[in-house]
Amino acid sequence: MPLPRTPGTALRQRLAELRGPDVPPKALDARALAALAANPGCKRRSILDGAGVNKATLASALGSPSGFGQSQFALARGNTFEARVKADGGAELLRLVHEKLDPGAVPPTEAEVPDLTATGPEGRTARTALALRDAHLARSESGAGGWTLLDHPMLALDVAGSPAFLEPDAVVVHPDGGWTVVEIKSFPMLDGSADPAKVGAAARQAAVYVLALEEVAARLTQDGTAPAPTVNHRVLLVCPKDFSNLPAASAVDVRKQRAVTGRQLSRLTRIEDIADTLPEGTCFAPDLPTAELTAAVESVPAEYAPECLSACELAFHCRDRSRARGAVTSLGRSVRAELGALTTVDDVLAAAHGRSGDPEDPTVAALRRAAALRAEALNTPSVSLPPSLEGAACR
Image (cartoon, rainbow, N blue to C red; front, side, top):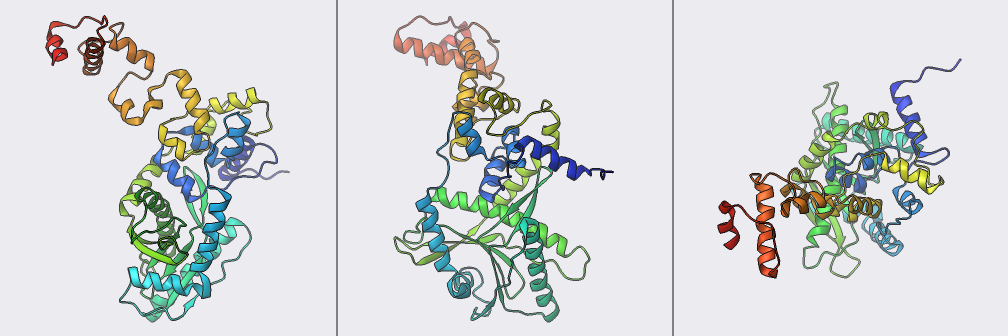
């Protein structure tokens, strides 16, 4: 007699069915999670990421392959630089943490590097939590301690009712018991500063790790036997110095990114709620016929914006569909916000040319003023303006 399925087991089974038979799940990393949090209204990305669907493979099967992702050369260069930073038991990495974040602590002449090897992401997550607990309790009981370096720990974060397993480059436990996230990137730091856009992306990614660490800290102190460890909101960003392979570091305050990401993740629609609205038999397996796969993808609402092009593998497909519908979101979120209830380009043009819309509506009035000014500049016929607006058009 089969055992009854628990809600968690039922959800995992449902997500496996959505992913397709024999299709392994793709882990949701911090980079993808930061992008998901930046667009919480996109149910399509939520369900695909929650089900572990490989969106790059899906985009290719739909006929809209994406160029999103890192090149193999960049990955190899990043791995080589990270290995250099962590050489000799992380001596250089700990020196940078001490110099940039905790200069008053005991210099890190040596450090404990616990073995985090375990089977599967769940096992590695449990092993990481155990290592953090041991380091925390040792410092709580003795009142002092040395440095501890966790190399590629595994953390878990609940995302819309489904766990996401995250792997930061490193987490450092300070002698006073504080926990610090370390992000190692391959883009250069020139004269002490790096590309602001890339630093911002790294900060958003690190903020996800900080949120996950805070959950670990909360669980460690539920019994009240020890004070809660401090998760530092200043992370260490390590990059190559100038155009060399030597490491340089900077402390980055991620409090703003952590607050925004936490708020956005809390707004995500729960995955099971989205799954319940899908037609029976919906499946995103890439080997399905193109028409059937397209119908499955289109059964989940998307919230496309131009920013998706740099963050989502399905962006080209969603952009084509958005343009075909004439959705104003394809022009950008700021344009969408300005147009109020006018959600399509046809609605906007009809309002601008007087074929629809309430003339007293400020959005409609602004569109008609703009149309009148354009027509006057091009010396072409235009919609007649009410007397109250003719002066504004002249101005």
